[in-house]
Image (cartoon, rainbow, N blue to C red; front, side):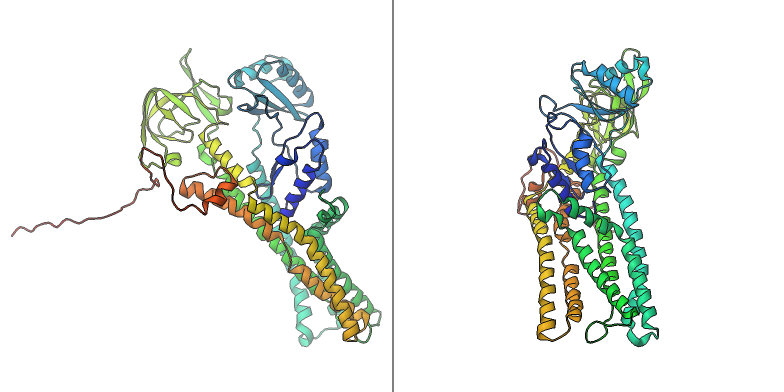
Amino acid sequence: MHCSTCADDVANILRQTVGIDREDVQVSFVLSRGELKFDPDKIHDVQKDIIGRVAKRFPRLDLVVLFNSEVGDGSDGMMKVRIRSSEEKAAGMQKSLDSITGVKTTLISPGELYISYDPDLIGIRHILSILREQDSFGDVELDDVPDGTVMAKEAEEKHLKGIAIQTILASIFTVPCLVLAWSGSSIKIENVIRYGVECACATAVLMVAYRIYLDAFWSLVYGGAGGVFSRVNMDVLVSCATGAAYIFSVAIFAVHIAGRQFGDGPQTPFFETSCLLTTLILGGRWVTAWIRSWASKRLQKVGDGDLQIADVRFYNEETEEETKMDANELQYGDIIIASQGEKVATDGLVVVGKAQVDESHLTGEPKPQTKSEGSYVLAGSKIVSGDVKFRVSKLTQENTISTIKGMVKLASQQKPRTQKIADRVAAVLTPIILIFSIGVFVVWLLVCALVRKNSWDKSAVIAATYAVATLAISCPCAIALAVPIVLVVASKIGLSKGGFVFKNPAAVERARKVGKVIFDKTGTLTTGQLHVEHAYYAKVATIP
């Protein structure tokens, strides 16, 4: 999505889809992510009934289902994993697992099986052993569940690179057009050659920015499922402005080549208008893409990096042997070994050993804490010295780091009241701008023709210039983009510098009114950074 209005259009399409709960549709432009609830009795094929409807309006979007599971009916606390195989094997696995208590499966796409299981009833290794016992399935291994933040980052980097190339190419063609158009008689060149070069440059710029016009076409054809006004978005405005300037200029150039003129005198094409406007729009989208990329990178750092480790050292109590294991295959009650220099994979209770553990990433305490039998260790903590064996109390999907990361994502994705107001203003402002621009064209056409006594064709050129200028300066994208960027930055800064997490957007809005905070804590509130508060110098008596 290249602008916030696209996210609104996607949300409107989803809300108008039969079987989707309108109140639970959340689409974030910054995160490039959407969440919704639907009735499986009304929507049987997610790819066709949901993805297909969005793809019909936005054919250029890469749409991926991150997860599809049941809500309610005891689904809270269910762990989720994914297995990728052939279509035939995935269907067979689904039949084998559907009869097991505590396990629910969903085929997201052919060959892609999602498994939800209750870790209190059955462990993931037990599920894998059931599948591996059947030779027809082969060697069954877990596949990483797609991380929406990572996928959005990759897509954003691709989009950022593409829009940067488009902007640079458009600038290369715009500069000579501006030089020829604004130089006047300073550059001695025939008008036919001058206008021909300008026309070629303007045509090249429009071809570079062809996606704007393609998106405008799809918007007019399919709209955003939000009424007639939803068909008029920023792409339509830009297309109208640049298209009008280009068509008028081509018409003037054609009349000039034919040896004729508009009305009572020759008119000058304004190819530079379409070139400059298109380049500025591309430049603005480049800046927008960069800001969103910056925000998504900041959000991705929360709970990621070295805090979540992929492999652990599993200790078998029966054989007293140590083996390397994928952290995603952990079960409640497993015993993990963590030694000096290693990170704690997930939350657990120490059963053997003693170690100094650095928990400053969560508590802010700069001094390592002593952990021994009966103590709790938290995910992401680093063993400074010693070694411990701890029993897993929380799986990687529900440990402290994952919980904090989920809370930050939630705060960044949900829309606060201020954002909803900004979205409504931006949605209404776009068609108003188009109507207002048409009014500007009509008024100037009548003023130039009837009051100033210009010819109608010359008046049309003048009126088109003012109408195009009105469209050019009235982009509403910044209004809808401002609030989500503030939420992302506030959530990131709050966690990284303040050490606190905003649980929802409403908390961010209320936080600006907070004057005093009361902490219910028995320990010490610190920043986690040592520094000198005061320095005293003792006077030393001199001995004669």
